[in-house]
Image (tube, rainbow, N blue to C red; front, side, top):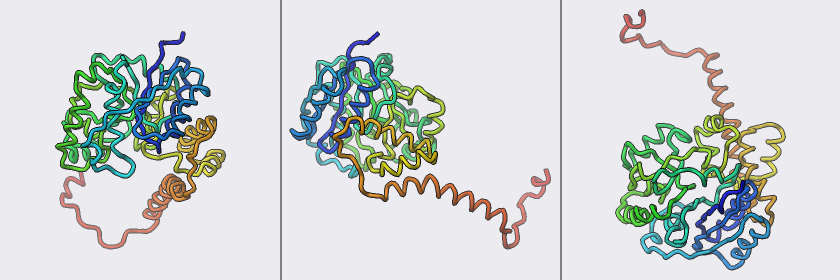
Length: 336
């Protein structure tokens, strides 16, 4: 049985246009339900607008694509961010304002591909919360990273840090909670640099009970520290993959395919090739990197660094330690 039309929103400027098309195409290929796509246009050229609208011809279950312009917020235009971010990231919180007709919507970052049917996420019960998000703590990053974030960002200790790349939103409750306004106010008074600007601001100023914790299968981050463990727990139920740590379009596709065929780094190459699977099917995508260094660095970290650690441990066992050993402060405890 096909469900009602699923509303999906994206927010991007021109440089993310091709990534958006790959993401939308992958979702359409994995979802049986009809889709309505909403784009918050933060600076998309006419040429890319035409390519975006052509998705309806390639994906029959994309019934409509609506493009809207956000009201610009001056404080965001001057907000300091890393090169990989700009003020565009904050406008995901303005989706209910740009498209007030929406009763429910899924927001997605552009660096995402689908691995399963997004209907599962659409049907999640928000239990009265304005939005749902996947918590990074325990799913993708351990207590050390959480402790560092807590010390730096000073968000409430009881809060679990969540990722804003996938949001299931109840627009009415979202607006009633004035989430956009509160996050902007947080930005105005923030005295520190925010590495992940809107995500950090949300985690600092919103209460923990204002979001529903979603399963990590809805926003799987494949190259995070705990991702393999998380992947083993999720199994075949993966729905959305977000390339938050490593970007496939920065990799040399041929090298990745060769490693995969040879059975080397199968988990990593599988996750990278998932993106290229849909990019190749879609075609007309200019996302091929010619810089070899990201690929070399990627495989060096996965092949030679672990090998170096193993060799170091082996050498420690073979080569005897030099110098006199220091006597134990408590011989009695050693004897026990």
